[in-house]
Image 1 (cartoon, one colour):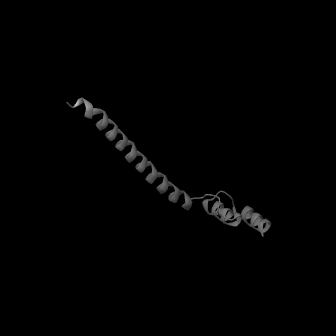
Image 2 (cartoon, one colour):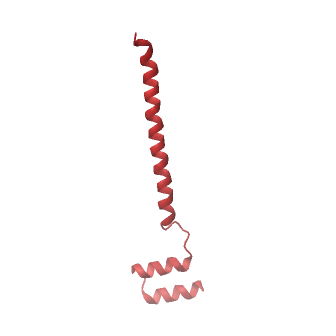
Image 3 (cartoon, rainbow, N blue to C red):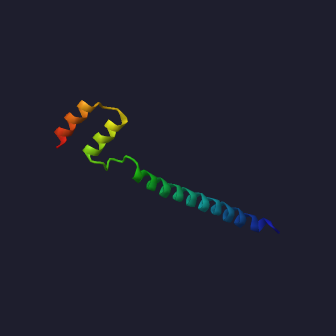
Length: 72
């Protein structure tokens, strides 16, 4: 008696799992896109990048001033 119902229950349950997995993936992708917009995504001006490099200690003051003058 239950043989006719097992196919529809399997596909209904299987598709429900796929639906929730897709929902979770969509939420993750939306969250990731919002987080990515706040990081260094190339939207900073060259002078801002130069200031960040100086603040991190990647370049010294002399090099910072030289490059700042070149940019202005």
